[in-house]
Image 1: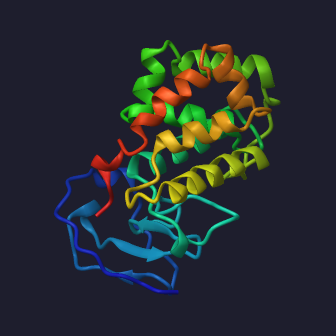
Image 2: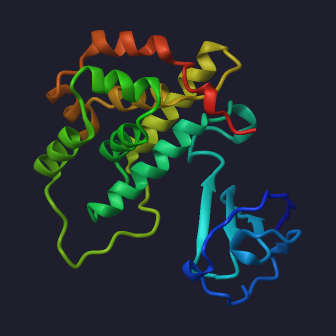
Length: 229
């Protein structure tokens, strides 16, 4: 497993939030000492192309996705996802867990866009009366609630429709020939392209239509301000 060394500026965080046990992993390399938790910060790349940060505690892991899952394309054949798109996906996955759903569906991707909230896609939805709370209410009404004692997996797998929505986003970006990033707008329109999905049905119920889809498409490249360097 490849390891990389990064330098971080001092960050003041109370050490009471973390324990001081040493991680048991030969795949991690110690960075130069920083004041992050008062100890060394450990970093490694996982096979899933995630960036995992550990602060002297195996149970305390900060994960930053560097790409989103796809079945049709390799990373060499597509542009990068915008920071907002990646954050939206992670937040959507978290909402699926909060609702105790076994999978991350198009409805979860939609919630993620709205929770992230700063993208042109999220702003367009809110301006048209489509808010997170309305979407969540529609989701519960459409899909119901999970059993009290059911626990979602740490990373609920994508439904086929959600996977196709992400693949659609990549495909549309490749078709455009632009060199920019794949954005939350691509994800939103990917959700809309899945006509039989929960996400599409909820959007339609809340007043989204093809005309609005064409309008929001104008902001396809509007997420690049938060690009990862």
